[in-house]
Image 1 (cartoon, chains in turn brown, blue):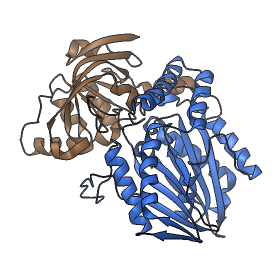
Image 2 (cartoon, rainbow over the protein chains, first blue to last red):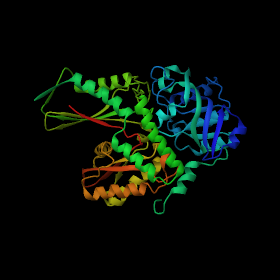
Image 3 (tube, each protein chain N blue to C red):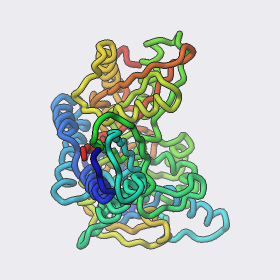
Image 4 (cartoon, rainbow over the protein chains, first blue to last red):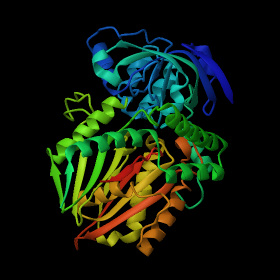
Length: 186
Length: 280
């Protein structure tokens, strides 16, 4: 089913999103990948604040290529989410409501998604040029020294994603593979 | 004896970095187009169409096909009648990579130390493999390698008794485990034989072969065909979201090996299987 939602969003929106839904996101999202997650996690361990209010927000696992002159961003597709798994439950406990990436998540992450009422979306991996067209603006808001891995605040318009893990814990990767698996391949 | 100045190497490597990251080879483009026609899943079809749009946008607007513009892997065949003038060849190749990534608006994805992880800010050093060959030319194959799929690559040190069934099993296991993480549809590069590092190199090099070209060894070309069919029955599909297009090709290279061993390396590449070739 195709849906359009605005970000940030609350628990009510989360409940309407189901595994397999094709969703267009409009609003504000934040980028963070490996190094930024490590830093945010260490900040929390030291009792410090995160560089942005994570409540009801969505994190996009993405490190862009540099923008050419006059453009908001370069190529901007998702990176593999599983590298962020170690840090994710702590962020979900703080009210993170969505993540955009690609690839499998651990059982711990799936559990934390259900417990906290959140969603894991996939964007199409390797479609960075296409996806960049849905990003209206980009601004580095923290960890500038990390270069491509800095935290960026993005304004997106009709950014296309697919619900992989919904708030009930359904996982599209598991469901869809079974549907198309042919006999003798297992 | 032919003399080649390092300036020529730098300029060519620089251009190749930019070219490879914005345009895929024709065989890859055709393979994507054909797979879209055959794909059984409606969502899979839609994703494949998006990947084709992505290639068009990348080329027309000069936006890298994928934001992970990779670590530059470079195969160089040097004719032994070539004299390199003006500097060290390895330095020239790295200078070309530096200029290509900085001037070409490509992402700098290389860290200086695997543990301390400070970015080198110019995507150097490259990973360079040299071969000395006959003649008076230099052939450069440049293949920027993204790490979503690189991380899902595997080496299996099989026993000779495992035989061809063991090899098939190893390849299918690697692809199944990679699943959505490797950005399918993928190209599967396989090395069989040699030593631990040789089979990995064979697998990497296999990724630079056209997806339309089979191995010249008949039982290996049959194996390539059989495995491609089996991989596409796994159900993983485009983006790992289900479907009949999980791989576009299986390319296998072999090499003699030891009486005690059967090494198998599986180097997985996503659909952004980039490479370009120049001969100087």
